[in-house]
Length: 259
Length: 309
Image 1 (cartoon, rainbow over the protein chains, first blue to last red):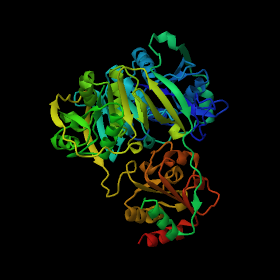
Image 2 (image 1 turned 45 degrees about the vertical axis):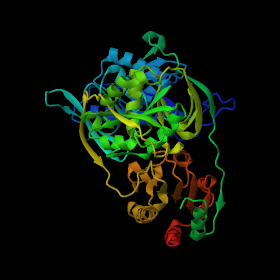
Image 3 (image 1 turned 90 degrees about the vertical axis):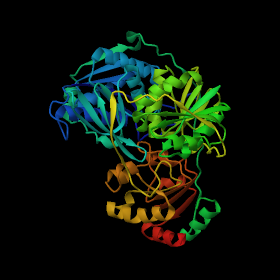
Image 4 (image 1 turned 120 degrees about the vertical axis):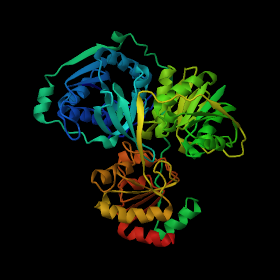
């Protein structure tokens, strides 16, 4: 089985995003960038499937293709995934920050070409926080979707078809679904803890292939539908007061009406 | 302009997040309908009909809709979309699951988790885990929007809308297997009015629960944790408040033994009142706290329990 893992290069999750003074966006100049943490979890799961680790049967996955849509430096992000164990990469170069709908359309074009059995991706990127691409890709492909996966088991269905049994993290608990493959699965935090690539694997990854294409190669409509009017900093909280003890705290909380 | 709100159904009723989404919808139009999806959901539809300001309630039922399966919800809503200029849902895990799917089928850019309606086509939403606010104007004729419930007041009761039945699509290529809902008397982290969170200072899982659980029960609060506490194994992963965990905005957030890493602040800084208890007077958490107590939680929390009576 072949797995396609879309990954995004985003601001590192330990860096505080700062709004540009001209309110056009967030300042990304000289800021540490990393793979979107949720995508890293998706890569890790695909690699575990290929390795036959944990509950994954050996030979569940034989090829992992990683795709990123973004600037030239997104090749580094793909390289990280290759060092974790993915087989080859594809960069669709774009200097524009594409909207989820455009990304989903491009990924659909990649799926039409690559014909994976499973698309595994992070539930959201920590920059745009849209939480939309996986669901939109599934809709465009007319595939089933399982979002917010905390556990994925690939197995056979009653009619010999392959299915993904996915336990989803939902408000209030867990929901388990069984989706016929091919399917789109978006992953949540609890699925696994991604590995650090070993030095030999980092060296090996340098020899793996990354194909580079342009958005235009796919003939997909990527015209933005949304206009960013402005990006502002949220209202800043100012430090309040230190209270002497728990009794004073309780009385103050009662005064402001939260107790 | 007509707006369809997809209800957040809870058994025989609809959750408060539905009322809050109606408030957002009423800012777009006076013609607001509610769609209740499920199976055996007549009572929930009747409950939705009592929300003030609602024109009518549509009820769509099928086995797949009973489990809010994205494929079934998408097919049902897309069938109704012709009559509406905007479709809204609370940004629950269900709403986040099916709304982008609906948007893609309608060839519309979804607008996720709005916190403010500026005008008919312009909205404010948090990005970068709330470290920036983006004001966006949609050029799409139809809008598909999820609404962050904590940012809107709940619409009142007192309505008497008519309930109509509409066709409900059934499941597609995904099938429901099972639900495993946490049976807890405590409110859910994302919806709780009070959240008490513990950090790495607790030192062990036993200590974490021994300190946090009684306090949460006394306050009727949900329990949260910092990433450091989760990573150390003191608290389960679904307790995590922060950029990569849950984003919460309760009326009262009490951070105990949490230093206040950026990662954590991103998940709780929209809380109405923040209390920090930490023995390090220089901990960054105090920079966002309305009320701080500098002290060891081991003495402060028991005192707090006593003061609460």
